[in-house]
Length: 483
Figure 1 (cartoon, one colour):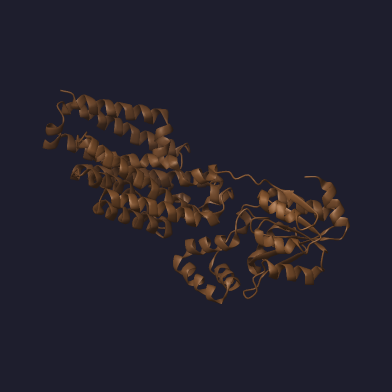
Figure 2: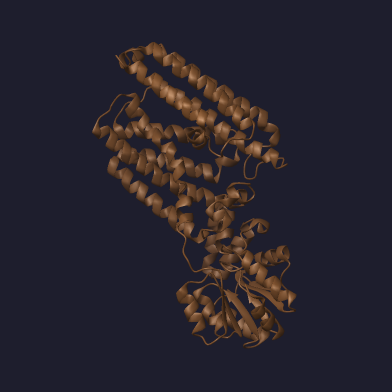
């Protein structure tokens, strides 16, 4: 950015009026406040939406009151902040003029300490488009201000400005701004990056959905029909799970921004507008449920139960200690149940018992990893969770105990009559118990040392020791099946 245009405009006594949503902020305060309110209490968010009958400004006022937006961690546009600082350094006056609610605008301005004046919507007047253009003309005079914005509605404001400054505007919007006959300047890029959209889906988390193939494999139903329906189940689960990941990211904005790694997620970092998240979550949800209906009505019911459980987790259970771990274990197990329904393979009590204990262990490891990160950051409790750092030793004990019980369940299964019917050399399968015993101990110790990924299954795929354990387990399973 050249300082020459800033210097000349500031010396011309133009007031720099800056928009908030999409300009100073790589987000939108209307959506920020809605998802913050929904995260706090989804009922209060829905109640606030009723205020829309009184106009958009009334809605913004209601959401601002129901939410707890943390302005200190919002994704601000560094280039815009640098521009404002340069303007002030040149002796120019600055004002934050936004359609966001006045209360939120005041908090942002207080945090940044960059503005001489702050003007926002007041619950009655929505300060956008014509309203904003009329306000600026009356406040500073026609052509007596420079306006920095990013939206099509800002064309009405730029038309009465002495200088137009676009931020991350499309080529079409830039051309329209120039066509107004106003001196124009452009900040940022107009290129669309689709990588954040893919990242928001968390395709690496689809590894968990491989569990739907487990009933087919363990039941030795190695035929095309079982594989095809299991594959469809995998796709349906991936779509619905991604819908939930998007929803969870929107509800977890404040917690993610306070986390050393999760702050880089697309919605938390501002690389993907949260306004797009609602539509993305809904579209993925619809596609997943249509595909589920294609598989069977019973599978659709299982998916409905999964979605209800995981939505409940996002809205409520994840903030309740121990209950959150139980729900996470249930969500993993639901994938196995769905695989059995899709492939029409009956599920044994042994498999379900083993799954519940093993996945409870992995869910506890997930919480253990978060607490280790929290302790390293010098904090006393996890943001948006029901745990304190002092709980770390208990959580690790829960992970070890439940993991060892899963090994015990597997060992008892080895002595059951079903094993002799399915495997030619059942004694070879005992090797799996030894491998699992080692792996559970390894994974908990690794987490204790702060080397665990946010998700233990994703970590296991990348970890060399875990991959070796997996290969050994598969080798023992094949050895047990060989005649």
